[in-house]
Image 1 (cartoon, protein in one colour):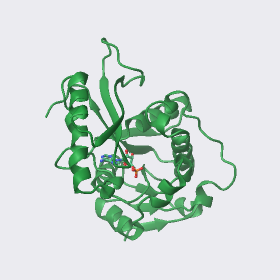
Image 2 (cartoon, helix red, strand yellow):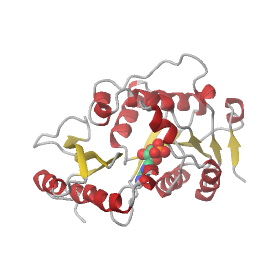
Image 3 (cartoon, protein in one colour):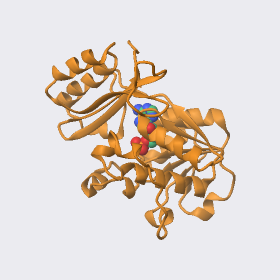
Amino acid sequence: MIKVINSVDDLAYQKWDVLVPTMGALHVGHQSLIEIAKTKGENVLVSIFVNPLQFENKEDLNNYPKTLEQDIKFAQAAGATAVFIPDESTIYPGEIERVSAGEIGDLYEGASRPKHFTGVLTVVKRLFDLVKPKAAVFGEKDFQQLFLIKRMVSQLVLPIEIISAPTIREENGLAISSRNIRLDKSGEKISEVIYKALTMPTIEQAKNEISNEPGFKLDYLEIIDEATFEKAKPDTQNKRVIIAGWVNNLRLIDNMPMGIRK
Ligand code: AMP
């Protein structure tokens, strides 16, 4: 049986090879992260913590899907050694020093969600301090998050390898997310435009796709330099298209290396 850990003391019963931080409502995207973690080390810990610091909106926080019993079984089936399910006072026992996400933390996702990335970095740093893993796995789906976590680890010289995991998608190309269950049939159809736009050979064609789908309210569509997260220049080596928008009231984000066609 998989071990369920709630306290910091219980975490210390062994050394952790790989940490997979999640907010629960586990799906096949998380499964792939756990499977990648298993290839990196024996003892894989999946954390489940819906981090209040990264939600600016209380309603969004309260509406976040919670499927704990299922998640524990799911993590076990995916091959995790244990799940760490701390409560808020375990993660934030008092005033915790915030880890600033800096200027890049205010762009794109951060522009729509002020303080979001500072909340993310603060909880990830706290999890790293408590678990002390050798490595941790994060999804490319949240590319700006992945970038900021890698940068934090490098700036703070943390002895943790950050492993990035490819995005797992639905048949129709939509990146799988815990929030997708809130899409109705027409929303599902509308959201297909994201993948279509990402796989267009030029940004103009991508914009054109989006303007043909009035149900999708675009927030941003940009080509960035993967190394710096700045806007890509013609001579940028590794370009990535990033996109976010709303289908009804549901915010969806995605990204892909530039020039990928399927
Ligand atoms: P979350 O529970 O949404 O905070 O996600 C936990 C981790 O799973 C993050 O590193 C995400 O980037 C990653 N993740 C979420 N959805 C996917 C997906 N469809 N494919 C790959 N990784 C994902």
